[in-house]
Length: 194
Image 1 (cartoon, rainbow, N blue to C red):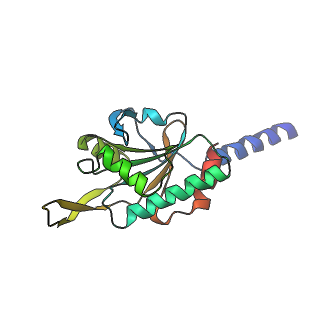
Image 2 (image 1 turned 90 degrees about the horizontal axis):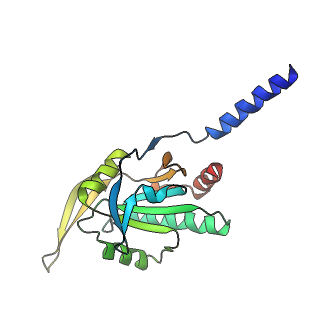
Image 3 (image 1 turned 45 degrees about the vertical axis):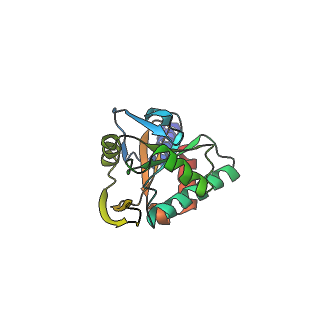
């Protein structure tokens, strides 16, 4: 009887630990043809399978939230490298593909001195990027615009501030406020998925 009770307790503890990060959502069975910052085709979310994924949603003209979120992604990446935690893929998806071409995304990564060894920037047709952000509950609404002397017009978005954690099966496990995320918290959550 004692063995049976001990077995049930162990099963309960194992299950409770496993559910520390319950599934919030997933990308579903839909696949999207996107391109990365090198203008190479990428099938999304297939490229994420088998890896823990830390993902944010940005546009490169963002004056506030996106630079903070991107810097926090960089800090998370650095911490994981310091702790020798591997098999984590970083992804930044632009929801402004009309401006954020692969070349613009590559320049953005270069200007911010980002380590692209396990970090990819994605863009694609607006219908695809809109479908992805809608699926995961990210809102991006065009807002004020600026017209420069050369006639070039830039518009800004009011948008969801999000960094997202997915498991190796592509299931979204947790959403964080990207601009103020705790690096300790997400690193702990990543370790729980290993």
